[in-house]
Length: 140
Image 1 (spheres, helix red, strand yellow):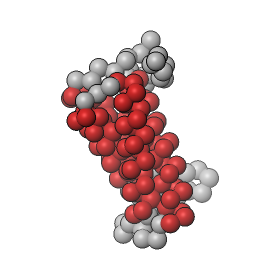
Image 2 (cartoon, rainbow, N blue to C red):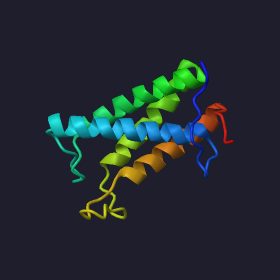
Image 3 (cartoon, one colour):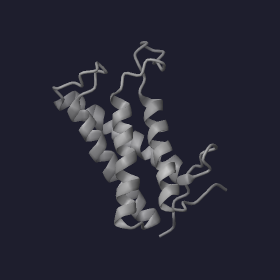
């Protein structure tokens, strides 16, 4: 099975970081929105408007999606798979809940959580991949 050609981050030069942050954001944020709106009743106390159930759905769905992506592309050990799938997903789900005020959506001037999710999960994923010695395919 050929390894998919991932886009490359100009900052990290890592296909794993680029694609992993995108997987966490797209899957996690999408599932969190659907679950949070449909079933979420308890909101986080710091006023971000996000629901606890939506955040849990983000964490679970992003972790599973990352785990599947890593399993089929890198074949890591179980410990490495957990570290690279769970921790960046957790950081992304936390970043999504925070009412970060310095980034706003120009359409309605509400706080925008998209960039902090991608940057925080991508940064941790890149750090952990280097820490555990996963040499993901690089650019070119």
